[in-house]
Length: 294
Image (tube, rainbow, N blue to C red; front, side, top):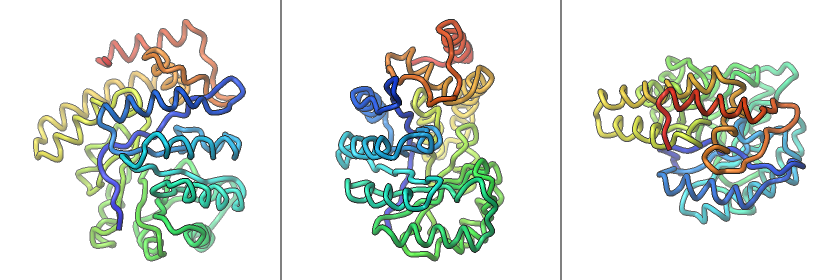
């Protein structure tokens, strides 16, 4: 069973003005992150604005992410959609272009019980022959307990979960219920060290796009057993994260920082916030004041 581990950016999606994929900038950003030590990429997730992109653009994104990584780093493609047929189509496409895994949130908006969500993941997993990573985010308005996640782990192809929740007791329980076999990846950037301590195999995060070295330091120190250095690195990263979160909505703010780094990633998908140049400069000044350097 393939196990994902290490530090994997939840990749920001560079967009043109018409919300098509800016492939040259995608290549530039991914190569920068690979050179900086990224262990893989989570593509078209919340950070990547997958749910807001047109299906054909999501396919362009998937194809090019796989091509750029060139099998040197694993690519996980998030395929959730408001209609199941599109999710399956995106899953099959991801497999056909060589993605290492697919991922999906639970179905959103309508009220679903555990049997509904189980059936969703079972049908999605049955549609492909590559690993499936559950994307657990409370933002999807469905709570996944350790017991329920362990039940879904019994489905063929479901091998992993992206745990974007601060309930680390449940993460530890899930590790125990699956005898350490389920591949658990921490979601909240600001609590990577807590996730690793609770048994996560790595992290997927938004701010990894622009502060990869800070996050890398947390993971590497933890893996070497130097908890003092890991705590120090997490505090440094958290100062930067807090500065970003208090400057504006996460995705537009992250794109503003990347733009200052020379990556023309474009605006976030409409109707997300559009910052003025003055507002962008203030965001960058805030994260720099919090200790960020690149």
